[in-house]
Length: 214
Image (cartoon, rainbow, N blue to C red):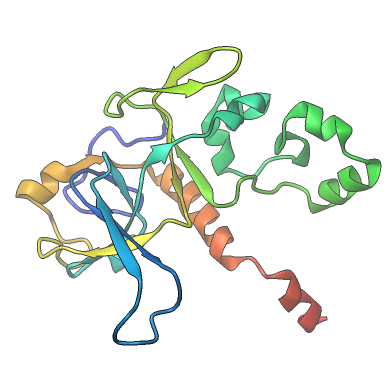
C-alpha cells in the first residue's frame, strides 16, 4: 500500500499538502552589487506539494517542500516502468533502467559495466507518487495515443523552503487550516523508499572525489 488509510494530525516527511505557494528566483549573474542587478521571482500555487523535511526537522515555522508535477511521456517507452511507475522509486536490475531496445543496442562492454554495479536506481532525482482520486487526471501525449493518468512525481532538484506561522515543533498536532491542507500520508514502507532514494541522491560520491580518494 502506497498511502496510509488513516491520516495522522501531524506533519510527516512525504505528506501531500495543498495550499502552499512556491517561488523560483531567476538571475542573469550572481547578485554581487547592491544596485543594477537583473533578476525576477516567479510565484505560483501548485495543486499539491510534498514535504521533504525529515519528520524530526519540521518546524518551528520552517518547512521544505517540492511541488508534485506530471510524469514524463518517455516513461511509457520503458515497459518495466509502464507496468507500475512506482518501480522508479526503488533499485532495479540494470536491464530495466532503460527501454528494452536501448538495452539491446548497448555494446557488451557497457552491459557488463552496468551489471557489475548490480541493483541500482534509475532516474536518480525523481520519485513517483501512486495514482489517487485526489489528483486531477491529465493527458500524456504520445505518437500512438494519448493516455490519461493520475500518476505524479517530485523532482529532488526542485526543493525550496517556506515559512508558515501555523507550523509548530516536530510531531506537534496540527489543526484548522493546516490540518485541512494535508491530503495524503505515505505508509511507513513508502516513506522509507522516499528516504532511501533521497539519501542516495544526496549521498553519492562524485567521480572527482573518488579519484582523489584513490
